Image (tube, rainbow over the protein chains, first blue to last red):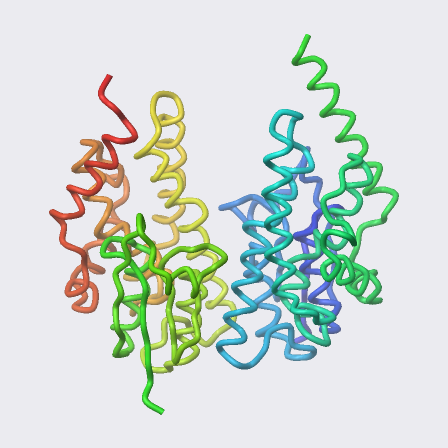
Length: 227
Length: 220
């Protein structure tokens, strides 16, 4: 049976881009379906992910899988080329630990620091920097979290390599700098310069414009709130 | 080399309990170290510097933290009585529901227990919605894993021994006759010897959660 792989995603979501990156890394052909997540989710998406009603959803021969990290593990187990997880159970556990840390701690902390109102900003930034420092310690001077090749932690941390830089540009805040986090900063360049990663990123200008619009919205909201 | 397995937990933590169940299911000998979270041991802080939490599994001196990561490690290291199926799609289903419990259901029920007023009402509504999804998933099955328990059962297992404690303390029944499949699952799960013989004492749990409840809802 010929394989049918579809990805339901959103152009600027790091979560659906993770799935696309893993598929590209393994040379898996897929059809991409762009969802209008803010205004008009498709009936198919709601059918395939009734619990969360979110992207990404991977559809493999008609069977849906939701939650990006669950999808990544599924991809790893289904297509064996270019593994993103090590064989050894302990090494695997370490990769899963750091993947969870990046996903459950770093991302929310960074997002919060980027968008928090003035009065909460310092605390949010401190917490975000703690996360970055801890994540950096997992790199241990390697080229990628996965060693010589991109692995699960690298994919899960894609937000830090690309989205974060653009949020920083849009907000004028600097959370991740070469001075404060030299190893992590270097990793963002290494990761970002992989051709397969570049193919799995949203268009830079479009994403920057998106974030700048959000900054403007947030400022308007604050101005109106203080009137 | 003789195997050395240690589990750092507390007597009551549901996250540690799910690891206990997995170890017992696979017949793995281990040393249990019950921590006092108000006075964490130096060893715990050394083994889990990132989160400083329980549970932590230490296998031949190597520590693993985060209960879901530990459960997958246990399944890959000791192959008897697997808690994850072979098929990648079925494995994905187990992982999806394990995440759902930890990220959605458990937090919503915890909020229903700890919050007050409008926030509490919202938490109860969210909990009921979440429970409906779980009820739907269980239909036609004895366990989340099918005929035998698997990862999702171990992760949802806290419902079987803690929900009744919450209900006793708050006087509010959250898993009622609207959830017949879930109620049946709880009963089946509790009857398994692995589970039945490895539960924290009910009375002690009631005292603990009664005290916590009073902390979150001080008498005015």
